[in-house]
Image (cartoon, rainbow, N blue to C red):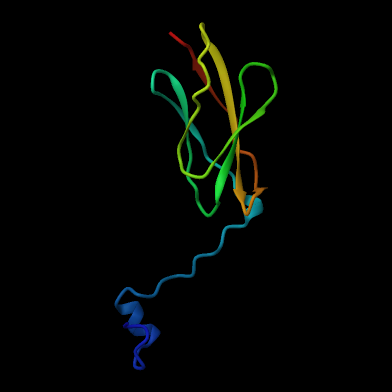
Length: 119
């Protein structure tokens, strides 16, 4: 309402805290997910991530085979991997990439590792 008033000026808006610095859009080619992993729900890995300006994230996993396979597309942070835990200890690795408009964009996250073990 204030900004639509005929007497409104940008200087007045700055005084009232209604005007600020322009926020530059992030270049989608430079976007890189910062991910973490924590164990939840009996030892299942949870991938912790922030959406930023992306629609979601593609998550890939290596369960010790030496190659990454697609795990899931997640649109609501965070994601819990509910795959059956191994009987003994195993190291699972994860990496992610952002999605915008149904396409992968930006850079791959750093690979993170976690040791999992079933009961």
